[in-house]
Length: 106
Image (cartoon, rainbow, N blue to C red; front, side):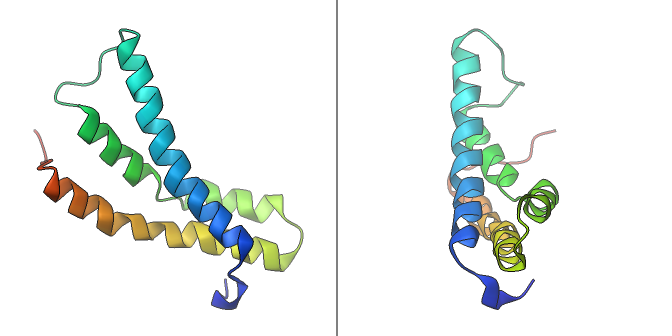
C-alpha cells in the first residue's frame, strides 16, 4: 500500500473503525447491562471503553473487506491505508488506561 493513495476512503475507513467500534461496543455493552446482562467481574464503563478502543485496531477483517469491496486499486489502497492507520488508537488507548487507572487484573 502506497502512502500516496490516501484519500476519502482512507478517512472513511479510519473513522468507521475509530468511531464505530468504540461507540458500538460501549453503547451495546451499556444497553445489555441495563437489560440485566452481567459484565465480567471488574468490568465497568471505563474498561468497556478501553475494549472498544482496542477493538478499533482493524487489521485482518478490514484489510480483507477493503480488498474485496473495491475494484479500483486506488480505492482499495486508500481503504487499506485507513485500516493500517487505525493502529494509531493504540497510544491514546494506553494513555487513557493509565489516566483512568485501569490496571491488569488477575
